[in-house]
Length: 557
Image 1 (cartoon, one colour):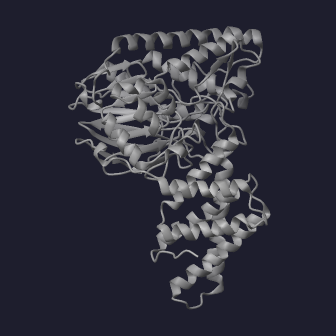
Image 2 (cartoon, rainbow, N blue to C red):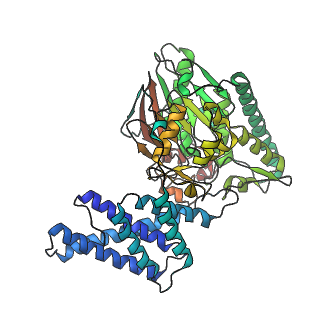
């Protein structure tokens, strides 16, 4: 048995870690069977008894207290089991099965947990795992291989060279309390005039799609002009701090904005939207985006500019992917191309095989929604748009990207300077990666899945390379909608997820995104000081057909 900390909060964390470790191992043979569940419940009861004895110095504890503690940790067991089952619903990359992705996540989770303990604690956990492996009378070869792999990874973990972690010297970051602003307007004509869905009639769809295809062309032409103006400006620059105040350009797939220190800036940042048009509309109106943009255009000396940053994943999952979120993002970009930054997510990824356009990221609800009526040329147009979308925005010392940082080996092989961010393999990996609780993630764990993890020290090293203090990213389903994944004094990693809602009619009834409280961010930036305020998205207001024409059928329209 493990010895628990005398600190009750740490002891609670230790108990949760052990349970999560045991549940993860129970899934290795793809079947968390009743015998394994019974063993874990019995082990929980033993651990509770041990913890009670440690707290009281060996004296007896009231049975009702033991019962409450035991019930609490059985609920933790159910919570962890539910989370692992959620892994089976996540999108996976082309060439990777769901089972491979889940196995990689389980392996990472066990690695993270063991790194929290000293060698004695690790041995105690592994002993409990050994008992679990034998709970059903048979030690599955995959379980034994999994356990041995975790032990090897722990033993072989390397450290980042401290000399490569150089903090950004100037600036500060303030994370404010979450807000729930109310939109001053119920609607806006810029949005309402585009609220119509595609017909399921092929001939009508063809006519409707023509307008969206023209919009795609306008987006791509605008991006082409921006790239031509910014071509080569990243080359040779050591980092984000190298650019003169006031500079703004797109070089390849990387936007750079170097703010003027004397000016105030406001940014609205939206994470994954996944077809949740009500979330997009609500966020825009809650921060009064259109009025602020117009006020700056009318009198820029008195009204600070407002920027709009999209972190990608506009499509799939929700009901209004192509006709709602993506169309609106494109309309916003062509209207305000110097203020709107549409970054690419991993779901914005189509490929062509034998003359047919396919969606390798599965499930692919957006493509499925029009595949019966759309010609291949329409799908190819979307594919070309996705390839043209930028991947990164560097705004002062803020770094915006869909996923995270590149894999360790790729970064070592391909990085020369900040212009390396345009490397296709680096860009692809930065759409897929997620932060880990570990300080370092071994390369073998990173290679286990296209959706690979990175550690805190690896993140610090990358941020030193690019010269930024804060990374804002989406990609990862965050139930609370916003999370400071790494909240260090020198650098921070902030995750935001803007799709979801328990009763959001944008989503199918069985969508696990209904577990998310969708959030967005406002960032006020001046002289290197960023005040970041998360806010809850009021999607319910825009499930109302009076304010959202996508729901006109609720009125019988």
